[in-house]
Amino acid sequence: MQLADERIELLPFKDSDFELFLEIITCPKMMEHVYDPLTYEQAKSSFEARLPPWKFESDKWRSFSITEIVNGEKLGYISLRIVNHEAKIAEVGFMIKANAQGKGVGSRALKLIKQYAFDTVMLNKLVAFCSVHNSGSFNLLEKEYFIRESRLKQNTLINNHYRDDYAYGLCKPT
Image (tube, rainbow, N blue to C red; front, side, top):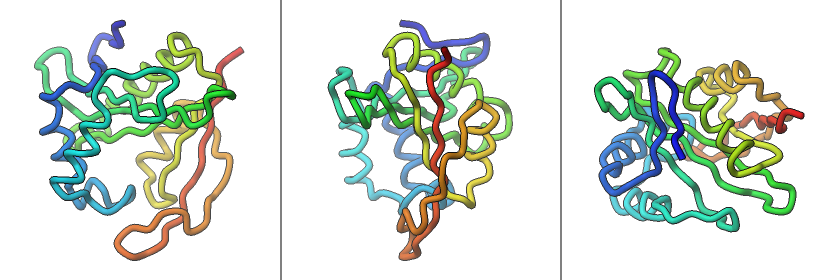
């Protein structure tokens, strides 16, 4: 399975991706719209749960590093997690390093993960959630044809404050 375009490739998480994951998941600025930054121990545990093997029946995240083909730089990661096996629905989540944001990396990664989800995993629908204040994420989702389905009031607790989230959905093209 190769998930790549002319600029980036998505590779299943391996041990060497821990530094990338740690850099993102423990950074207060990167996590300001997601949840409280994790400690080293929490990050290690979360990362290890994302390592292969992964099966459709699993309820854990299937995570991929986003790597620039030309120089091998790791730009972020994107993940899928089946949330309803019977209806074939998965949540997608992504984190792009600050120096790679606004350069089309997220859009490329989301295109590739949609193709993988619908054509390889044979999912019916993808869902995504993001803070109503995270314009980068919701603009990216909308650019990639996700439909805003609802606003979830006080859905996430970050830094002891409840935050509203948008819920997005994208059904498999027919």
